[in-house]
Image (cartoon, rainbow, N blue to C red):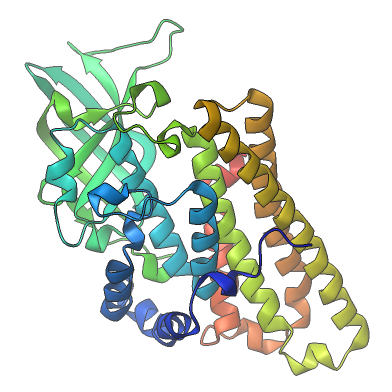
Length: 358
């Protein structure tokens, strides 16, 4: 018995059609289409992890993963943008309470950012002076705020932890404080607008910095006690599985495959293998969520299992697609077709650094 149904069970046919019908135009715009964004704002999908009392959806991690997988199944750029921007919104649980209203009391909230530590924050009176450049900020074109990581420097010297590693802090920038460089030119995920951004000598108060640590959470909810590494791994993994599911769905409608019994049997075998890994992933994640909700803690063994399940899901998603792709004919090689867009999106997403470190 399946624990989690096909992604199509978690999004309406009408919304799916609306997103897919605009996908080609969104690629030409190199950002999500305004009509796609209107739906996202109406559904509050950039606020998946924002508490309900703050006008968000307040979903649990398993609920969010099912939705994000369904959105990636609908369209890779849609799923990826919502996942990354909603993931940045998760930082609300760690922000200074004085800053939260400034960021979230807006009608069209969207937070973009980068996990790369490519900035320097020099300590000054009452705060920091920051200079840095960060790549691949998904959703940058419509972001109202940005998050970024910086190495802390004091009197020209890098501040270090007891183990000798540099002290790293996360910072929140408002849109008017950053310079956006529209330089996203990859073969896939074209509509995500994953541009770079920078700040130069930006002076901020201490309350613009935050630590992504369960002990530093300012909002009391199990989702903010879930470790960030596994949070990131799971949310990105379901994007791969959502796109892989869509690719396999499209393959089943290709007459060239249907007319060849041996190849079609191979497709069915690959689909079954993929689905088994997918179900295992959700079982582990649900177990981890239950443990976290029960005592605000997840055992190291279970966290290891979550990371391994995420890696397996991301890996098998790409593997089954690559196994079947050669039998899909020129249709799959045509950049104007949906199946080719799914292939491009999946392989672009697979280059995220987290997939190389899982």
